Length: 491
Image (tube, rainbow, N blue to C red):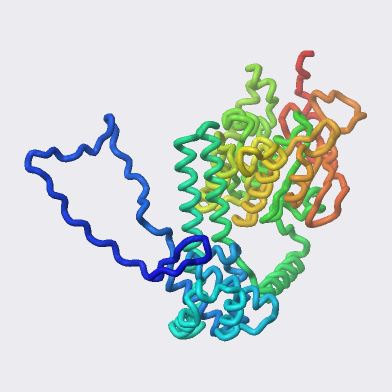
């Protein structure tokens, strides 16, 4: 027997088992059907005779626990079920759950009698099976002790249905795609990541949070001012920012050619060579080979332009060899051809699992694709989505993420609102306008801390950019003899 559920669809109260089909009668001279069509193997195809993933028993278990212990169970339900009534597959259960939540939020008493009256007032009682079904839900739930298990199963089944919807839509797009495979892949990966985030959502008791905070405060006191994060190699910068703090997104910003890549690579060099910690660098602009040459010149302090022109001296080779040995044995992982946010996230997870990376560098933010929602997403939405995803990645892997960004002609961050909303720190490289010496060799630079979760804003750190080595140094440490070899490029 079926009950008409409003005007939406019929809900089957009993799902009969599929009858076993009788064996087909095949004439003796008939040929076995070919598994190939036009020379290609037939696709397995989608089963259209199966119901989406769900568990009616577990859904009834959740609702039964709510009726047995409404205040505790409903509070946890609201946390565990971010999609509300859609977490339930059975339409009867959707209405019952939605009604129970409404009663709870309106501070009305919740039990099987008050639920019966509420459904009756809304003219839903008959559609959900009447008082008999409500009693059945309550009577078949032995206690509320297993509520967490029931809720987890219901939520997982809901996520499986969401995945099924994503892949079903993707199947249709595969047959009708117009924007290229990369666009399709990025879109599907973003949707899958959204499902994953729904699975990883967690709630933390305030007692646990406070205990952890007290522990960190005590550790900070006992460490006598030691950094909470990774040292950047620049003491003044570490003093103002507490280092590169795990879980934070830091955005160093500069005009093109002013050294944003060099700066973040200097940070990476210091961490892998001096702190002996593994780092992942996603090079979206430069090839790994080009970045490798810059790294060698920076560590060895060999003129990059001399290398590109083949004008090395005998004294340069031992320095390059020593730098190569140090970098080869380090935990630096260079990744190229990985510009979509979904691929960056997936590869970062792999590197974290296999190598326990302590820092992620994505060079640079405006080159990351796949952060927008749908084909109509504008550039700001694209960058905002990428920045938000990198922030989530930093929290998930508990590592700092450095994502350099370009400045516009007026000195503002490109897509500034979108980036500033998600970044924990924004640092701007500002070359000095009036300075003595050859600016093709050395630049006096201020690193202005525009946004800072862990300290003051608006302060500046004085740096010197050694252009011949693509290397930054603290201003007080500059050795003029080291940079005298630089040769200005011809005009």
